[in-house]
Amino acid sequence: MRIPTIAGRAALALALACPLFAHANASPTVLQEVQYLLGFIEQSGCEFNRNGSWSDARAAVAHVKMKFDYLLQKDKIASAADFIDKAASESSLTGTPYQVKCGKAAAVLSRAWLSQELARYQARR
Image 1 (tube, rainbow, N blue to C red):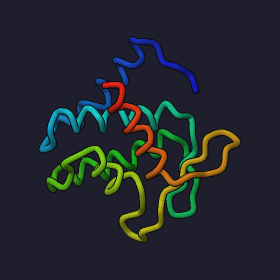
Image 2 (image 1 turned 30 degrees about the vertical axis):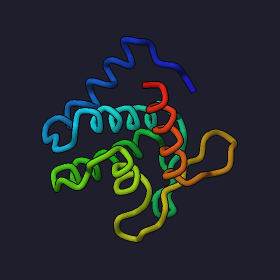
Image 3 (image 1 turned 90 degrees about the vertical axis):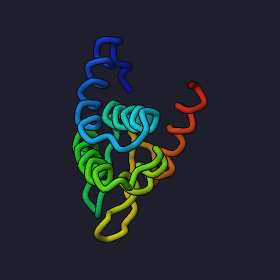
Image 4 (image 1 turned 135 degrees about the vertical axis):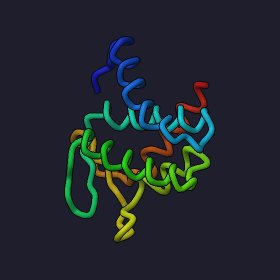
């Protein structure tokens, strides 16, 4: 995984934050954690399986961001764990779990992958 420059991280953070703050019902901490996770997904270079179709990280971010924005407007996000559970773990239509495949490693459930990264992020703060 490529480590972005400080300027690159700042630009990514700003780009991801703008839509989040447009209708922020969640706390600033939750928004910051979700913003971090979205950046983590996008910078991962991993592939994502949603309902049997694999896509790149950028498409995955676009999809889960859309779901997150909808859930945020409906006041259904109270934590970053809610983001993972409700927007980034499974299809809202079929209930099929999302999977993540990084490089040659076996695919894992996105819920576990993101929960582990959230725990790492929270431990550093």
